[in-house]
Image 1: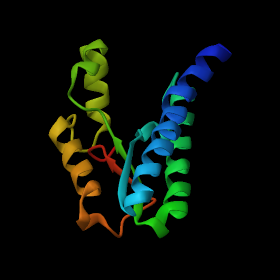
Image 2: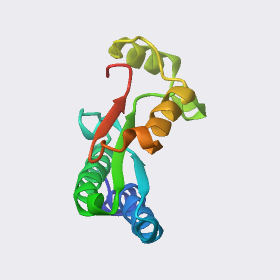
Image 3: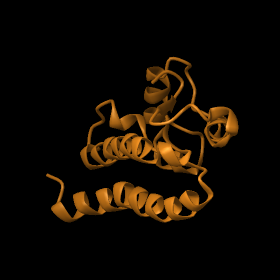
Length: 145
């Protein structure tokens, strides 16, 4: 029952934004023949979530975009990967009721939400030279969700 305008807005922000960011970043990275593109996706791309069809579709598209760009840009020493953070203990969770938070925690095998630093550590790894052989991958940092 989602209005078409809402569907298009979510896809434009999540998938269109990733496309636009990548397009501009690739120009500078290509000149240097080195770069790291890291897209922030979501486990929603892989698991069903009520009321999140447009969000899940946009995030799945983002992973497909990353895999395709990884193939296209490998010869320029540019890697492209996604990180799928699960629930992260930030102000974004403030809108969830305590009951909803407890339900989600119960579904997460580690039984807690991520700390922002845990997501940042995954980003730092993918941005590092040590990750030079990782491209086209999606790293789920979700406590097992």
